[in-house]
Structures are given as structure tokens and as C-alpha cells.
Length: 275
Image 1 (cartoon, one colour):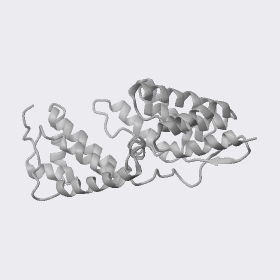
Image 2 (tube, one colour):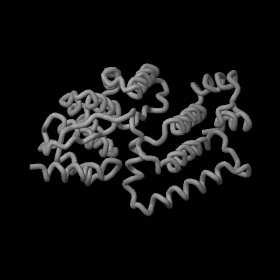
Image 3 (cartoon, one colour):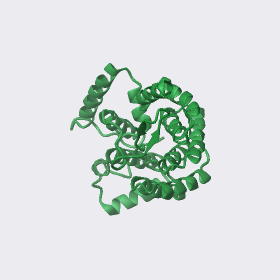
Image 4 (cartoon, helix red, strand yellow):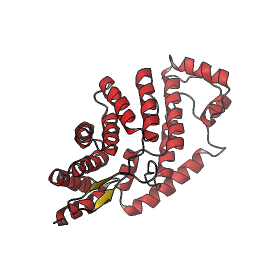
């Protein structure tokens, strides 16, 4: 693929920093519709901004937390060093054809932020009752919608609506919008995951189990991390007073590793020890 010179070096810097003039930004977006290199650049810039605004996704946190503890510090140190090198005035800015460096920069943002725990959605949270009568409080997972869906305006609009409803804790509305996303894209494991969580937050346990089991199956086919769907599916079974169904999911979440492995291991022990 040949280099694209639609943007000057100075304009490229301005685009990355979010300071490109509106007229040139609009012209660039229109140009990117017919230029693969610039379309990739636009998508990568969107990824960087989404990471900066919303932080790393559950998948990235899961993969990070599955590392050995001593690897965390090394990863953070390497990311910080790479970020410092990338921001040096002496470092050249590649043109189109080398735009994939932006994706690397986006991953550096993730690496630097990986020490941050999952943020709770709103104060408090719902709970489910364990077999022994103890209440287990939990929090919804942070919503991480796709940063860009080029050529799919309907899906992009629905994801935005879902995010707004989810972040506002309008769980029933979020579940309804995400159901529309799944109708348009039946293979979207994340839509099923967030819909299941939204249903769980409103105590609609059987519906939550169906959505979360579907997300788990889809993610398994894609070889994606299973920590979240296993954990929340287990919680839905506990909420419906089905500890026998929850226990193997908790065990698997603990064995799989990821963000919920430790919690799953502790809850599984409590379930086993219950009278």
C-alpha cells in the first residue's frame, strides 16, 4: 500500500492531539471513506481516545491479571519507557502505510492503565443470597462499547444508546437496546454479555442466565477470555437459588483466570461450606 499524503506532518500531529481544524477534520473523514490507510488511521485515533476516556476493557484487564504478579511491574515499566520514547521530539512520525503505530500507542495507554481496578457503576450494588444465607454484593462490569464501527451506523448508534442507558443504570432500557444489537449482529458476544449483566442487575435471573450462557459460548468459539460471562452467569444462578448450577461455573472461572478468578474461588468455597 502506497503512502498517503492527504495530511501534512503538522496536520497529522494535530489530528492525534485532537487539535486539527474542523474544516480539515471533516475533509479528512470524507477522504478516509475512500482511502484504506486513512480509514485505519481514523479508526486507531478513535481507539486511543476511547481508551483515554473510558480506560481498559474487561478483556484487557483479564489478560493482564492472568499474568504472574511479577510480570505486572515489568509490563508497566516497559510501557512507560516505550511511551516516553514515542513522545520524544526526535522520534519521526510515520506516514500512511506506517499508521499501525497508532494501534501500538493505544496498547501502551492500556498497559499504563492496567493497574486500575474495575470501577463500580454507581454507589452500592445488588446482591444475591448464598446457600448459607449470607448476602454477596457485586458490581456491574464497566461498559466497554466498540470504539468505532465503520460502515455500520445503525449498530454504532445502538451501542451509544446502550452505553448511555447502562452508565445511567437504566438497566431495563440497556437490556432492550442490546437485544436490538444482537438482532443485527447475532455473533456479538459482548452485546450478550452486557445484556445479561443488565438483566442480572434487575433480578431477571433466568433471562440473565440465557444471555450470559450465550455470551460464554460465543466467546469460547472466538477463544476470548471467559472470566466475565462465567462469573456473572454463576451470580444469576445464585440469585435464582440454584447453587448446584452456579458451582461448576465458579470453579471454571477460578481455573480460567482473569479479573474474577479470585472472587469466584472464594464464593465457590462459601457455597461448598454452606450447610
